Amino acid sequence: MAAFSKTPIHISIFLLSLCILSLSSLSWSSSTGSNLERQNDDYEKWVSWNVENHKKKTRTTWETNQGMVTAGHRKRSSRSLVDSKLRKAELRRVRMCVSQDGNCDFTSIREAIDAIPLNNTKRVILDIKPGLYREKIVVPLAKPFITFMGDSQNPPTITGNDTASTIGDDGRALTTFHSATVAINSDYFVAMNVIFENTVPHVTGTLGEQAVALRISGNKAAFYNCTFYGYQDTLYDHKGLHYFKNCFIQGSVDFIFGYGRSLYETCYLNSIATKVASMTAQKRTNTSLSSGFSFKDSTVTGSGLLYLGRAWGDRSRVIFSYTFMDKVVLSQGWNDWGDQNRERSVYYGEYKCSGPGANATGRVQWARLLSDHEAKPFIRTHYIDGDAWIPSQLPQ
Ligand SMILES: *[C@@H]1O[C@H](CO)[C@@H](O)[C@H](O)[C@H]1NC(C)=O
Ligand SMILES: *[C@@H]1O[C@H](CO)[C@@H](O)[C@H](O)[C@H]1NC(C)=O
Ligand SMILES: *[C@@H]1O[C@H](CO)[C@@H](O)[C@H](O)[C@H]1NC(C)=O
Ligand SMILES: *[C@@H]1O[C@H](CO)[C@@H](O)[C@H](O)[C@H]1NC(C)=O
Ligand SMILES: *[C@@H]1O[C@H](CO)[C@@H](O)[C@H](O)[C@H]1NC(C)=O
Image (cartoon, rainbow, N blue to C red; front, side, top):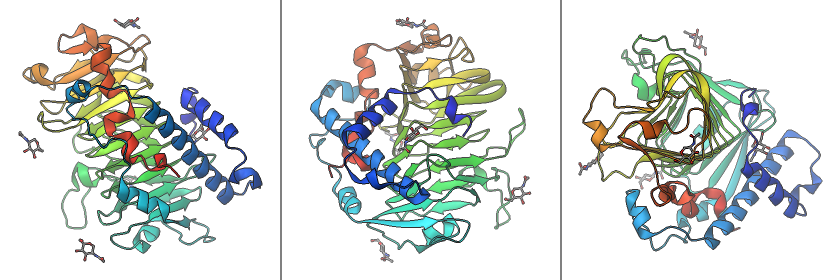
């Protein structure tokens, strides 16, 4: 959390405050400062902020068909329609709370998830009270629409220490996939103000130390004000449409990896590598996969020498826009993972970045500074079909 406070104040927070001002006549005037009330307030603020955002975005149509195709994703004529399954779920919200002191519905997050029925159709908001939760959590595919909501002043930490080589119950090594402290297999997951952690350090040159803090494999997931602490392979952005907003992500090697189609906005990416490492390992393997990572208005900093990414897949795709890059970024910017063929097929770009590490992308021929036209598809929530599914962007 200390680290999160280093995050620069962003435009979004400004917008959020504007929104709070303009909507202050609504529910939270009665707040007396208890945790539950504050959390409810946080949630309402978050919802109203997103509703405003949604309205703003639907007022500005900017993208062209051609632009969307460049991003490997055809424009949908129904873009303005919200996701109806999601809308139904949001209309029927259920709240449950988790607290280790026994003053709540559940004492562990796992118990709370166990209590949610299979094929759940309601938005289930778990108010998770402050505390250090030593839990290994797998949210099953059949439990969509779950929200983990922490307290913004004192977020809960969910921690673990499994690695790829930890021996599981079946006597075999877990593998990277199952090393995650928290794994989300279901769709429409949301987390706000939660710290996800894997505490196992990585020693350069040793194998089997991949230690995932969070794996997100479900579609249409959103993370707001979340923190991810780990070393090697911190955030497994496995697959699906994902939105990360105001998140702090820390690790040493490949600490954001997978083949999700994800937008990271106003995030703070912190390397704790001691030598040379790559920050992202994006695994798009063919042109028909609509997958890629887009980082916007973010900050890249930390220790060691950092490649922005290395090409895990032939068609690996990563874009940084309006991002501050500290001097940790290596002058050659990107790494082909030892396969020169990949230099011809990856899509790596930078757009209007700043700082001493910016524009490294222009120095290798196979990664480019993007034109306005090329950057467009990646720099709005349209990249992840944002307007259609980001839960809180539903008209109320
Ligand atoms: C996110 O964090 C910022 C800064 O700590 C805080 O001002 C804001 O209220 C938080 N947002 C939510 C939705 O909790
Ligand atoms: C959940 O949905 C699946 C697929 O539709 C169905 O096979 C299963 O029986 C359902 N389970 C419950 C508990 O409703
Ligand atoms: C991992 O955490 C558990 C408790 O959550 C602890 O008992 C164990 O010693 C830890 N293992 C290592 C290697 O730190
Ligand atoms: C692209 O990759 C996906 C996922 O691995 C696979 O299902 C699909 O068949 C591949 N398409 C082509 C054209 O290779
Ligand atoms: C990076 O390149 C862009 C466009 O070529 C330029 O406007 C910008 O000033 C450069 N930034 C730095 C930090 O070199």
